[in-house]
Image 1 (cartoon, one colour):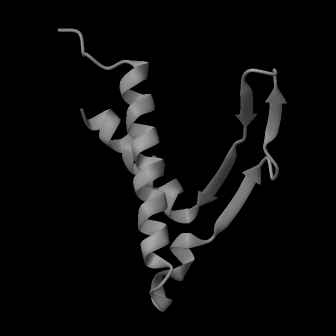
Image 2 (tube, helix red, strand yellow; image 1 turned 45 degrees about the horizontal axis):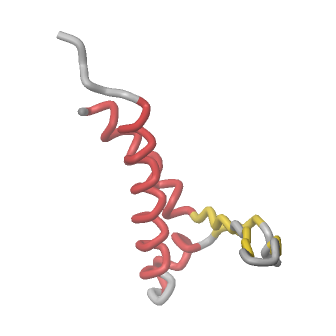
Amino acid sequence: MRSSKNGWTLLLLVLSGIVLGGFVGSLASGVSSLEWLNYGQAFGLDNPIVLSLGLVVLTFGLTIKITVASIIGIILAILIYRWI
């Protein structure tokens, strides 16, 4: 039998691992022994790009914060993907 694994499943699991890892990292920032989980780097656009077309105004902006907890979430998501 062929497995039902595909790229969309992996993408969904990795994105959920990033979100849940970031959530755990932000919760752990208040606990002194778990503050290292929220250690990381943020990169992206500091100021959003605004495109005014007269009738429509579009605002583009993206900031990504990678923390230790989100990396652990990505690793767990990949392990879950391999297990399914």
